[in-house]
Amino acid sequence: LELRRCLRFFGRFEFVGSGGENHVLGVQKFDAIDYGTREAPIKDGKKVNLYCYTDAMGFSKNAEHLQHSALDTKLFEKLSYFSVGEMEANVPSGVSLQYCVAVDKPNLRLSSVMAGMPNDHKYRSDLAILGRYFRKSRSIMRQIAKALCQLHAKTIIHGHLDSHHIGKFGERWKVIGLPGSAVGGEQFETSRLGLHSPPEAYVSAHSKHSDGLSIASLAPSLKAEPAVDIWAFGKLIYEIFVGEPLFRVFSERDDSVHASKCILTWNDGHLRDVSNKLFEERIGPKGVDLISCCLRPMKSARTRSMAGILQHPFWRDDNAFNLS
Image 1: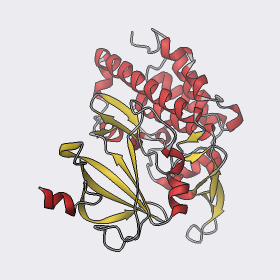
Image 2 (image 1 turned 30 degrees about the vertical axis):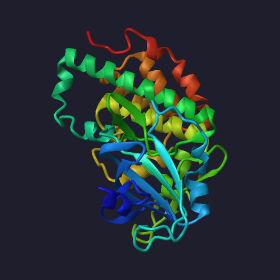
Image 3 (image 1 turned 60 degrees about the vertical axis):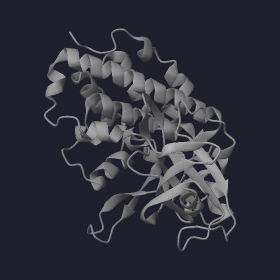
């Protein structure tokens, strides 16, 4: 046991698999098992992601702002920070690092729950089951709203909120994927953007492979501000309640090219279609209003803060869903 401990990275981590994933430039992400320290061992270990930074600049941009933020671990994944010398024993092959962040892995991701929902949507025809589903979903999303409210109060913007970055630890659902978030007012790089991002994250471009037609392309950077997460929150809560991607309202196609073009051209007409779909799926007026306030095309027209989202009457409405 002592020999095994000596062979572990930092005396506590055993790597799973053969190599690291390039998360962003200057960072490698590894799957590992954390067995704790000699003073505080973890029986059987726990699964973590190890973010290994090759220089101080990468760590500073990706994770340093989180180190002293004192985020509530009832709302967020737990992060542990380590610094090492370049000659530290048992550093993964080919990696010369100075900083490392260990992030607890969830037992379950919300994306897995949504992927496992029946495609035929028969569960929606049983109003008792549907009511329980709606109420549980509302409870989870209120927890996520509380987490984002705390994150923004510490001037940190997540920037990649989607079902893959909501994880379950025991009985609690938490916001995960914090490395790569940004301090408010700074810039997100393209690697942090995607189909969860708001219209202002996209620009029109021309493609050599589309006969010169205009396509939607991610902007080279995006200012980190609450409106980014508020859009993503609205998209996420819509998809949980409706049980399908937001862009399915406009087309049966699920490809990213169509979805990106839809975000780029997002307007009040799209928002009306979204509202109509929510009404069809038995979401009441207050729920429709909450989601619409998050998904307005102009960021200046969206609800200004997650504190405002939490104050919305939807969360306290006994008739939030049309189940009669």
